[in-house]
Image (cartoon, rainbow, N blue to C red; front, side, top):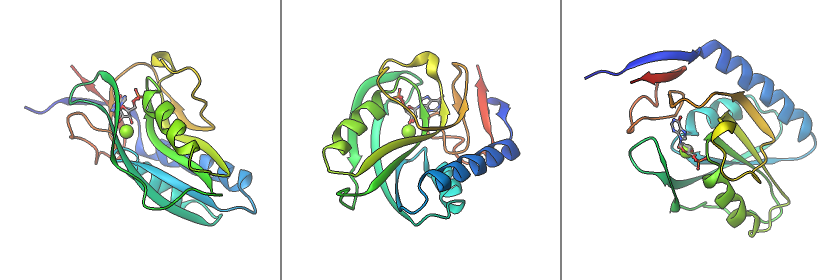
Amino acid sequence: MEDKIRILIPEDQVNKRISEVADQINEDYAGKSVHLICILKGAVFFACELAKRLTVPVSLDFMSVSSYGSGTQSSGVVRIIKDLDEPLEGKEVLIVEDIIDSGRTLAYLIEILSKRGPKSICLCTLLDKPERRVKKQVTVKYTCFTIPDEFVVGYGLDYDQKYRNLPYIGVVEQ
Ligand code: IMP
Ligand code: MG
């Protein structure tokens, strides 16, 4: 059976906002290189769109962690499925995430990645759901959209591995 999906943020708005955030990153990282860490799989669409708009030198690496089961509730357990290929020593690291919900995934990632000697480590997220934050210490430098406490899909985000390919951000109507 098909789920009904309500559009929350249309494609043109997502793309426009990604361009604005990219401009800000270009300004902030002027004269430096940025090492993007894309958190698989959800952040892939966002990371590509963001990277295409960056004019500072970019390198890219991928990491896969799991913090959720197949439902819509955080398990609180973060597991590394695929680690980075490259060392972080001396790099200006920018973690690219699809959504920050409880903040557990990022709190854990920042803790382990900070120990690998990056010059700096900042966060960039497509979406932020601050109402659901458990890990209050997670500070996000770049947020495209702050959204209410609703389960969203599209632009990389899934519901049971479905809907990642939607070009907009939508809400699955129950
Ligand atoms: P956190 O550890 O609770 O911050 O969860 C972050 C991860 O949970 C994200 O990277 C997503 O994979 C997933 N997630 C949280 N909220 C949503 C949502 O509304 N839709 C799809 N995935 C979500
Ligand atoms: Mg994710």
